Image 1: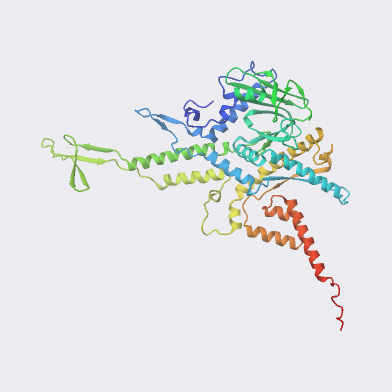
Image 2: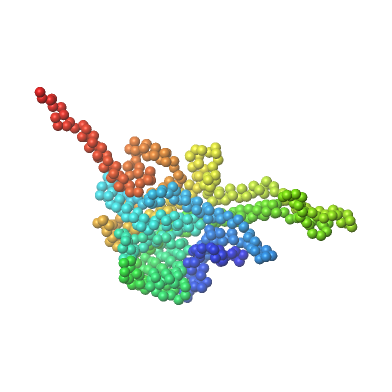
Length: 543
């Protein structure tokens, strides 16, 4: 719960409602208690987790900076932090941008799945058939991400992970509801507030059980599931184990009627239904994993400094305001002060005449402005520098560059704290996304999905490695990248495929390779034609 002196942003009707609208723990009308949840629901863990996430969200949305110190005589609120400089949201957005790096303007994925056959223990050469299969599996994973709006959901989850500490993805088998997909599997994002995980002691990236809980509107219940609910909202609960899964609406197992895209419908029971995959298709990716399943949020690192920074800026603003609009005092003034004109555009205040009985002239003066020391003024700059240090950002990340620092390598060195934080996050993201991609292939095997006649073998994980290909964290000069590719190509240290990927301006790499090879073949044919003697070319002419 928020402190009593903190205003909710939703008291202002001009604020668009967000996660608060769907978070069950915040819904007083619906509530979460033993009577409205399944019998085995871990209620205490849920409330503890909800309190932590609500606190983190209050920093990101700025609710924590919406405190007031009272009201004026005319009833207006006096803000404790009138500027409300939201460093948590600002820093989260910048770290999210660093995480994904130099995003291209093309449809190229921000993180591309790469599948390769495992190296032979004996050191023997890998057969071409396995290399071809690896490319097929790679294309399957990337297609699933692309049809799931992968770039968009990864960027949003990356942002939430900065202040919530991590994020969740869920794999869903969507046949027959998505006949437009040749691979009926999609990746969905889940807001961390809605998930309560029970993880494996042996592998933090594998869940043994998971609960998904949030509110849905009455209209969604009727249109998505074909059921009627009392009131405007209902509690949606999804419970997964390795053996089975159940969906509840207001604590009743769901029997849903799903409309099909081209007419008709299908009725499905979600009451302790067998889990065909034998794994929980929900995956948690932490920001930094530091001794706990849950990732570390940046909020505890900068929360206190953020309050101090806003507080001292408020003090400085108050002093500047009082200096510009100082209080005035007067004495020995009899009657009202009259404003009179000397000439066009020149006015003065007439204080009147001296009162003979007092023998003192009328007098008006302003209060003296505050005497600001350099220590007080520089304190805000010191606080901001400490905020950047604790938040792993530098002035370069905010666009401030000293004119003497023109070297790209120097600027990269100045960005090292931010780049190091991004690289550490990428380690966890790679591990998490590897798990998702492996389970995409596992779903294809379990559901016997065939794409262009290609079948996924049961032990695909055993024989093939799944990796992630990331884009550069910091922007590179285009000329530098081109020169690097040309140099490596000249000494046969880079493949044609990798060269095209590094340049990052081609949508279909394989199609571009085919075009290059076709043009090379035509060039060779033309050269051969020029070297081949033509008929009668050297025959002496007759008389």
